[in-house]
Image (cartoon, rainbow, N blue to C red):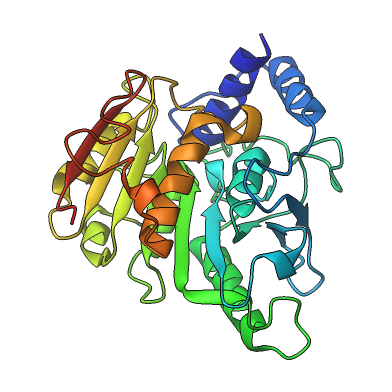
Length: 319
């Protein structure tokens, strides 16, 4: 029951970005969010147990990082900036997923307040509802919020007295996002500081469709200059068609699409972010750190995911 409720919650968070999706009854959503909030915060399964916090210098974001930064080593801390489902202003809406990534030696940052979990600092924002004219309001976060997070992290690397000074590997920078947040990540894909892009349960709408307040078209895919991975939820994922169409159009950079049969809700609230988080960690370890073991999940006829009966993988232009 809990897994079903959480999947429903994540699907709703993304579907509210479209005026074509009507929200479920208020009492149902209250139960869903209550179930989410009962799940304890986790520190991830990686070698660097993680915490989440709000840094006073970046008050409108939530930061996930190793508890003991000194264990990561000088110049070893990667950066992963995240766009939330529904482009929500809840930087904890994927907290288990982001804590897992941080536990592998990353500084992960999501825009918004700490609204989710038993240690939430602020109340959940109400689901966005259609305006009187029937249109959906603009998303509460934008791609500029992700850029702000990236700018801040790299500035902290150079700021004397910062807890991150000298720790960040500026060649290990990635961006990603869920649903509406995945479109935000693609909107910024041309940023020269990025080394890879992660798109989860998302894809750019075809011409004539889109998300209120966002003007991202398929032509944005041409700005990709790094390898990109799509992690989708299979044919029942409302973003499946858009994501697969993106993948089909990308022909100038290495690209992978992995489908898990979990629908649009993904595995964000499974323990340590579930299987999708493990796939993303392997991708980041390969792309940002050149980890040969992680690369085996994706490379070769006998790649790790190729032999996994629970997933489907397609690849192009891999080196």
